[in-house]
Image (cartoon, rainbow, N blue to C red; front, side, top):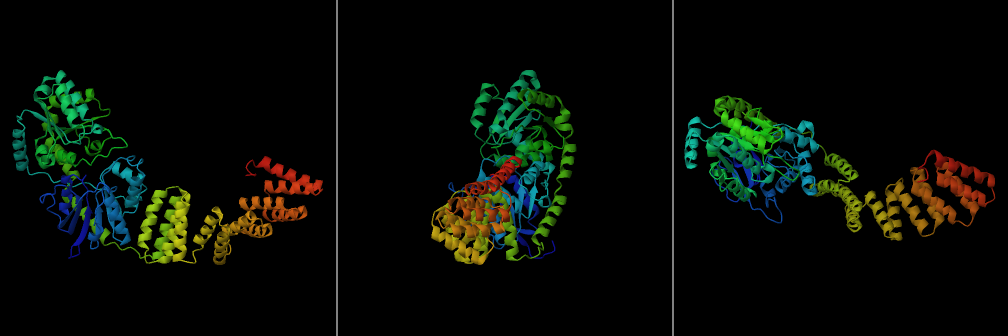
Length: 599
């Protein structure tokens, strides 16, 4: 970096971040001041030693993921880095960043596209945070697919590799020796690690079943293979019971309490790792940083195709296309029979993997990206230009009935435009429109009234106050609002139509026809105006006058089947059978040629 003064980056973490994942920020600390914001029930200084400031938040059951007081700690940062795109804390930070024009980046590790489709609020947060980020850094191809799914611009998607620093060989050997002694393992024993949350979607029971089958088929498995469940989860007790029922007690171990404290020791001691997740729409697996560490240390792996593990395996290990206990058992036997698989290619595997995740190259690229973002030169836009870009986006969301997404942008805009009554008034129009679409007329009425208070010349709000008054039969108010609208916008066809409909409803037909005719002059195909004129003509006792207004409408605004039918019937009533028949035949021919013409 060229700047002598270090810039500050705020990193928004959460309780799901693997602690070993935090090591990526060690590469940044010489170049930036790092503030880390996190939920952690038991924070320790060693874990967060490389951060300039650590802010620990308490989870509130009524607002899960909300970081109370976060905004007050972000005013002096140059960039915000979100480690998760779905948490409420991420949304807080992203909203703050947009309000004060601070660039923010999303590190995207989630890879389940359908995960939040049943949760509209979470889906809206994810969409909003991702699409409005300065850049999105997916950690995998699956994560990149997710970014595309949320319509993130391709130019914003910058794939990132995680840097891995291999352990010193002597340190690794010491850890391996110490931990294996603690587990009472000999050097000839093969330690197989299952390192994932013990939940049904990770298939831990399948591993137990496979081990039982492998024991029956191969003595070497039974005598030498030891299985360690490293983690916790809702299936823990069930797995212990099943291990007992399958008579695997001498082979299976569980490390569930404070397991992250000895993560390095487990990786150093492992010979084999098994991962068999099958994800569903309602599951969210943390990014398997432990798997990358195992690959970096040369641990052989068995995994299923289509998982995040298969993407990062670089075709090393055994990949099962359709994981079941029988296929997994055969893979365990094959691995045990092959000394080459367990140890022969270790250094070769490590070298290949570490080249892909070499820290210096990744650090150089990452710091270059950060520096460009922090020092970006964005052409200044006026507040009005920014608003109208936002307005177009909101209107598009409303047209697509994505009311929750639209509301998020509206509420954010109302915060950003506190000092500009004109733009705030326009946003209240959009908020009221969403409320009207959802049938909430009372709250929409309040929004439009507030919009007019902020800007008395807001003709859209005035017109819609007229519409609401019409709906609620407040006719005098409706007339007042529509006339005020026309004073500001004389060609507002909807207000002209509104006046015509009101006067027709209260029985002042001459006045009604005047406004409806004027509405048609701006919008000749307005069916409501045409239908109302037909009704007015039928209501007149003087059929000659009825014929006059119907002919005027026909001559000025073209063919419309119900209009021609009414005109024909009026002529027949007046005794002009020839003209009446002609108009009726023309109406019928229109109906035959255009089945929907009468609608």
